[in-house]
Image (tube, rainbow, N blue to C red):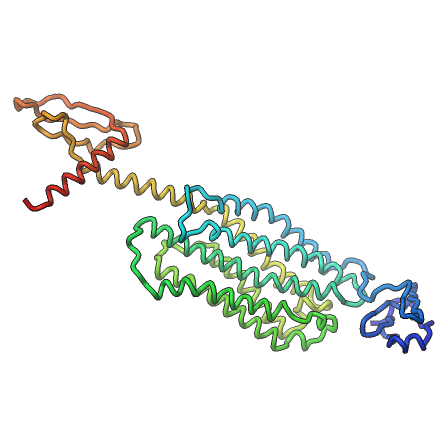
Length: 421
């Protein structure tokens, strides 16, 4: 890269040697191990005998205008911000508690963790998008590229976390529905208990190692645009651990289906799996091809956009759209409780026996054709009087308390009948 202006070399060589400054005619900079300044055209840094520098402009200063990478980065960051209110609304709607108290096995925080991870993805996407602006503008890559690399790479482990929490909560809700239906139907199963205890530990362990090896690293090597960085063993091991984490999440789906027998698999889960699979495939590909790497300033902008940005936006979009078709867990549980209560009342009323009064000769039976919705009152009729003559049916509306009392009385009578005489 040749300097876009006339190279400035009017320096005191003794001062340069004293502070280890070197003039690089190839790119028009003067630098030592710690500092780098532009030295061409109108950029004339003054280096004094005591080491101070005036009129200095850092080598990683934004010299050029915004280009295609910066424009797409702005769009990426803006779209992630625009979807943030939808995620906040879904957290409020799906994470709100509608029961009097939460069960210790099914905490309220369980359904919220997915959206907490989504908020982190929103923030990282916005920061990465706007950091990419200076990758185009910087004369020589510096802190903008290193910061962008660390932030952008952090998005992938967070996506794994969001998808895991979404999948795990789906299984937890299926367990909760089974528990509500029959709380005594759970047999002691050490294998099941140990799996659901250890599964999140292993998922987060491999996810953290993925983050540790790919994000928490020396990003100053990126400045050199060295292909050795792209294919180094540390990055490859990190991606491998990310793939293991993803496999554990997929395995969790089959375990849920084995234990809780859900009627169907929600569409949001395979759709989100597709987005994560694309992200991991891109991470593997850029390990071997530097032209695809988002950390290479001269890489293909189309590749970075299609394989790097779009899957993240796709994941946010799918989670928010599918959430609009979800009901709050508590509301679903309350509806199921109401249905079970009506079914129990219906079964009880089919067998309840009611006497007209203490002196009645023949028992009267609740009319089974009537309903409990109030449109038609429950009725009983005594078919014959004491003389054996038919008499007109008598009708009466029963309250819920009376109906429950009838059910308890009938259950007590049935128990007494079953006892040996």
